[in-house]
Image (cartoon, rainbow, N blue to C red; front, side, top):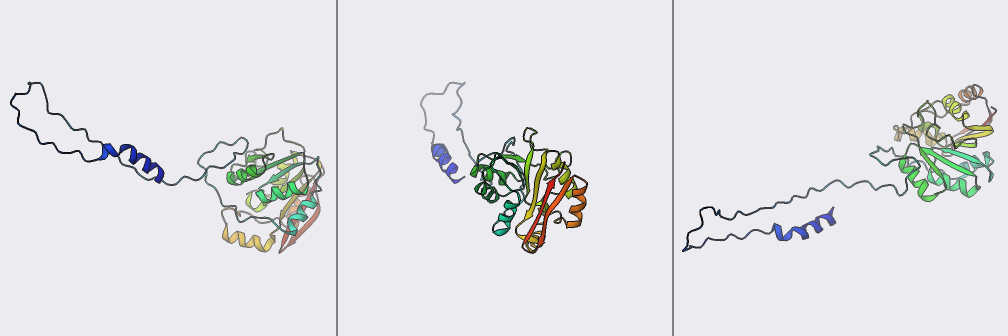
Length: 261
């Protein structure tokens, strides 16, 4: 606002200077009866500083109109290390893969594309800020906003993604505890859009130890627990999935399911 104040003050400086008082002089000739003394026009200008607006995202996700949005802080999630590579390996990606990444970070998307090219990569997230970062760094990624988290219209996570993006053969669920849905609801929703034999990879490479820290520090984001194996087996059997790998350790959470539908 400082630049605006400077330019405005320069433009109106001549108007804002005090008006000199002019003492009337005696006149030998009477004024016409209809003439009035000249009136001084006083102009006041008040500049009220406004709050600094948040920067607009450099890139806008597909189908999203920029508006006033209350953003949660997802910056504490930055996948890295051996756990991330293990999750990528579990997906068995190929150049023909059609991939959906749910609640990814920009660094995860970068690691995924570096590990293997794919035919299609769709990112879905409730954070417009995260999606804008993904789109800015990787313009080829199709980005869609999960309004209200994973509980979108219909109770699933894929309703925000247009139906023309279908037949996914790999789905990465990058942060299940922040989606606000049950494992059963998640798998039921994904089954509508996955091809037979598709792999669903749920992971947290920071592991359960860091997850418990997330619960304490970010309760607005972390709204549910990581699924236990027993709850995941129940959810999988009811939605035609088979668990092919499961790890729940302090430094890695990984669940790999294959769709049998």
